[in-house]
Length: 179
Image 1 (cartoon, one colour):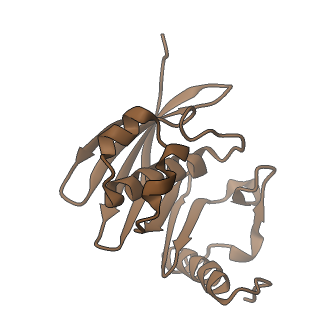
Image 2 (cartoon, helix red, strand yellow):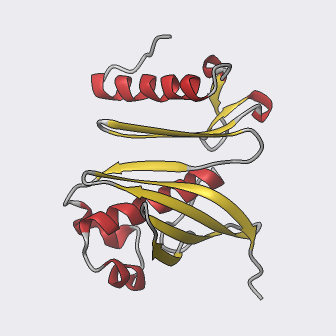
């Protein structure tokens, strides 16, 4: 397996993601990964649904044989406080109260929901608002409304929070009736 990526860190992340896919599912056809019309990586005929994320030096993947999935991992960095207004509503910003770890987790959750949906043209504030955020033993349970032109879904996510990174992943999808 080779990679055309010139940046060494990006190449390592790319290859590590593929290694993890093979580690989790030995017959995973990594050589058949191709971007769809929205640039979401896919396998022909959706033999496996998967999601890959990396934030140096971490890599995370999820695989589901039947349904689309989404995962995101982020290294915790102070700079997220300066850009929170780009992905969080005023109400969401109040909820996370400038806490760098929670802001990073909110970004991870929204990014995982975005990857699950797999469509371009998403406004993170308008189209994927966080509607609940509750602490559990390992991290947080997060619920997001994923709004598209076609429908609105309730996306349930779980998370892992460590000293230097957060990771959020989609666990369940429900129909959402706006009426």
